[in-house]
Each structure stands twice: as structure tokens, then as C-alpha cells.
Length: 463
Image (tube, rainbow, N blue to C red):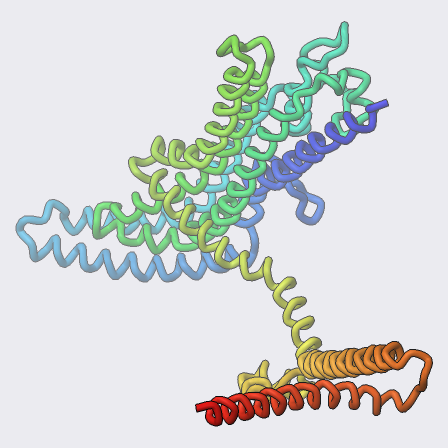
């Protein structure tokens, strides 16, 4: 009943593995482990760059400049050998150095071609030995590693090496594994960590390819100073070239080793704690910590080649990555900014007019800046005024009704008082009723005054 749910979860895992394989293929081509085709001929990417005619033309130009500089520095070295008593180099030795330097210009391209060829062979063998036996990327190995606990009965541990196993097909995976027991959580955490590491490594490989070409072109200029400074500048060039060239291979091999460690760590046979929560937390720490350490593999390999070179390379790569983020962030936001800007322009044009919208975008003050209401505000203001008018009319109508009710009540009261003897005008009765009350009050006051006067006169006569 829930087969679709397990297929959905496995679909997420296999998508991550496919992306990893795709990024690994790009990284291997940039690194030189996997060949590329140029005009039907297979070659590694670095060799393609170094043999490109435009790059070769740049090297020839730099070589001509290097020959001129070699003669200039050679003359300076000979003059210093003749004039300085403390010089350890004789004019003849300086002349021999000039000849050696000029011959080295010829051997630089040959030496680099031989270095690239044999290094690629060695690294390809090392890459295959650390890929878990998988011949088509580490995605197949990861799919099998996280499915060890989900193997069906009779399925071997290295089932992922079976040619019939296709981790990109859910149906094929079901033949080898019970998807309800697959380690989805660890596969997602480990896969995302590898993806993040691969994304940063791809940026480094692009920088590596460009740096190798630059170092190749300027090599004659660095070599030309050998007759003057005992080859110190050329030694710096050599260290930089080896660091750039070998750190890429080191990062690829480190990723393979990291995948092997993840496969071993996530096995249920490995128990750190009896508590399952702590056990899984420990394994998760290994996965995340290993992903973070991938960023330091470049420094590790570089420091083996030259002291401090790897750390400097890691620092430069971190600076380049931060700059790349600063460039990519506005580009990524550009479509959304353009969309919101267009929507806001249309709304401003509808509310304030096309002229005000254009003027506002150009930086001019418009009627909106001087307090003019928009069409929506005007419509809302009109609605508010209409509502106030309706309330006033309703209040007046209610007051009139109240007065009418009182009048009717007064008329009804007079009719009851008169009995059946007569009617009369309703309004007159109402007014008469009020007048009667007033007259009655006034008559009472007059009677009291007369009585008081008579009583006072009577008392006076008696006295």
C-alpha cells in the first residue's frame, strides 16, 4: 500500500547520487582523470590547454622575452663577476649558465607534457582503487553502501558491482534491496555534504586550469633570472606549478576516501553506543566533520609539496569563493528583482499615471512626492465620505422617527383623556397637551401668590 512512499524516498536519494556522479564527472575531466575529445582525439584537459595554439603562441612570445632577459641578466652577471672580488662566479661560469637557461626554454614544454602524462596514469590507478570498485562513479557505491542493511536474503555485500544493478532505476533497486529498510536519513546527509564539497572543488578546478596555463606561459620569464639569482625565482615558479597541479588530484582522491569512510561508518554493524540515538549522532558527526575536512585536503596535499604552500592555497581559494558568492548572489537575485520592479512599475503607472511612474524611476520628484493621493487612495476617501453621509442620513432618519413616535404617542394619550367625546387635530392636541401642562403650572404659582397675599393682609388687620 505504501510502496509509492518508499519509492518517493528512494527517488530523493538516487537523485542526489546522480547529481554527485555528474559533478564528479565534471571534476574528473577538469582534473585530467577522465579524458576529453578534441577533433576526435582523446586527451586530458590540461594537455588540451597546454597544446592549444593560442596558448603555445603566448608561450613563444614569453620565451622570446625570456631570451632577451636572459642575455641582459647574463651580461649583468658577467660584469659583476669581473668587477667584484667577492663574487663566487667566474665569467665562464656565468656564460655556461646562460647556455643552460636557453636550453631549458626548449625542454619546458616537453617536461610538462611528460609530467602530465605520467601523473594522469598514476592518479587514474589511485582513483580507481579508492572508488569502492565502482567503474562508473561513486554514486553506485553510495547507493550500495547505504543499502547494506536493506539487502534481501542471498544478496552479496558487493551487489552494487553487479552489472545488472542500476541505482537510477527504482525497479532495479527493489530486486536487490527492501526499500523499507534503506538508510534514507544518512544517505541524504552524506549526499548533501558531498555535493557541497564538490561544488567548491569545481570552482577550485577552474582556477587551477587557468593558473596552470598562466604559469606555463610565464615560465621562461621566471627562468630567465636563473643566471642572476641562482634560480630562486624559478624555484618559486616550480613550487607554485606543482601545488596547483597536484592539489586537484588530491581533492578528488580525498572525496573517494571520504565516500569509503561514510560507507563503513553508516553500517549497522558498527556500534559506538548502545543507545541508538547517541550511536546515530556519533555517525552523523563523522559524516558532517568529514565534509568540513574536505576543504582542508587541499592544504594537506599542498603542504606536502612545499612548506606553507597548501595553507596559502586554501586561503586564496577561500577569498576567491567569497568573491564568487558576492558576484553570484546579485545574479541569482536579478530575475526576482526584475520581476518585482516590473510589477511595481505597472502598479505605480496604474495608481499615479505612466508619467509619474517613469519620473520616479528616473529619480525625479513627482506628484506622489508632494502628497497627491493615488487612485486607490482617492477611491477609498470617496468611499469613506459616502459612508459618513450614509451614517448622517441614517441618524437623521432615526431622530425623525423618534420624534414622530413621540407625537403619535402624545396624540394617542389625548384621545384616551377625551374619551369618545371628540377628536381634534393631532398636532394641536400634542401642542395643547404641552400648553396645558405649562398653564397648569403657571396657575398653581398664581394661586399660591394670591393666597400668601391674603394671609399676610389678614394677619395685618388682626394686629
